[in-house]
Length: 206
Image 1 (spheres, rainbow, N blue to C red):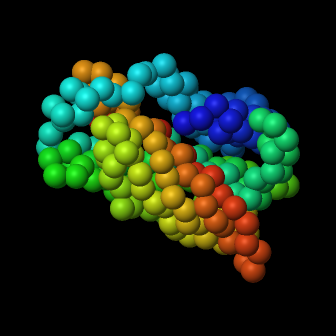
Image 2: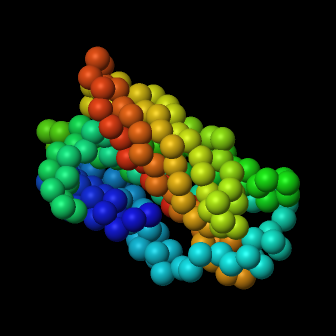
């Protein structure tokens, strides 16, 4: 996932939840979400040092595999440089991908669920619904390149948000494909308002 998006997630997620207060779960109902935020961002940082999978790694990959980790969404963002100035929603959640390396053209599909985050007024909420990652393929451009699309409708903080777009990324890790890292850009709709969206997926082999 590129540095711009990681910076956006770090600042927005931590700032939004920190504003709700610290302390234990008995005094701060948002502490569980803060703990999840910490775990997601730690995973993103942990895998960032991995190198792209080489040709031998991809040629030797076979069968099916499941990957799990972090899904992240920013709805209708406005940036100044690498600083997020505004977004209608900044969300994190669980991402899961199912990969078939045995196909003549390796495929992947999955989803982002159990989302939570903040809206433009720093209101914190858990979001229902699912964003599907679909029509994914590995190796279209290079041996480790990944393409996919995303689409779904989620609800939280009184908003109904529809998303769709295209994703691009890379398989990481040697001598086995350990991580799939994707980022996508597309459209969003909140009520009658149409905007943009950024969706990221960073998942590790289970």
